[in-house]
Length: 390
Image (cartoon, rainbow, N blue to C red):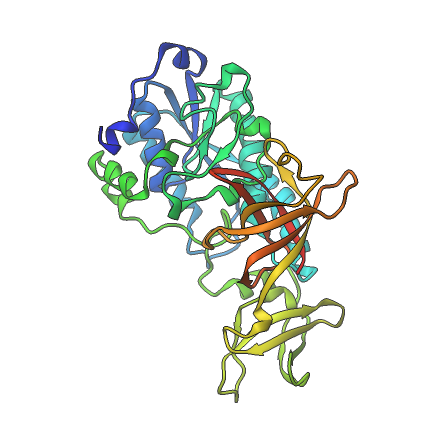
């Protein structure tokens, strides 16, 4: 059986009887378009829903044009001959994601708003809207991930708990972005492209009349806001005022430059300082003094660490068995492009909040407070926790 034919199976009558209507979050990209296509071929009644999460009327520097994406999403649905609906979640995104992101940046942290966007908006407010108002039985997205309840939630009727699994395409693994999803939300989530590779997705799109999408560049930058033409620093300046401070060399303790705000910088980022021949990178922040700590060279030891603690962990299914009693070895990553790394993990707070202490088997570059560390056991993404201290 070919890989493409494997993703277009004929569905059992029992599965179709349980799940008949599916809303697909249509973004204007190839993954969500192919997701809708696959579900339609499987025999489901599919509704394409475009979610507007950012108001760009006062800005003109976004490379990710929301209006153009909405038009593309509508065009996709027209070509698939499925209903199209556009819904506005600008207020929800602002309240549950963007304000939290600004608060973290002001505190000297480097947040991951994409994780929060999925857990608080896409797989919460948006999913509930679709289930309650569109008469659908499940919500699908173009994420590269899999659900243990099956490609079409065919095991949901057995009363099993849902587990978030890695996709077939390990290079495109997006489970870290879904690592804060709730158990109830995952039970209603379908990931049609999780069982195929990106290459196959593009081939399906091309063969199905979506040649334009198969060649479209993937979106980058903050979830729904996109990449900014004049850079992130100028974008964040619109919401967090500049606060000038000093850049300190970690070895000499001398001032080697100035900055306009610690919120504009993250660990491992290069900073260009006139008159210096060597490349300078940010390796730390002194929030109380509004100072950036710097080092010379991309591989300076201060940029690497092998341990960190977290805030309260979120487990999608249940906490790993015996974790509260003994340290255990899991794999983790704090950035989706980083390879999975083994680590010894123990509960550092035995109270109600499951805070973790993590010792990595390999020293990692720029483990950053504010980011999420996602934890894995085999194929399963168990959940994640915000990195607190390094």
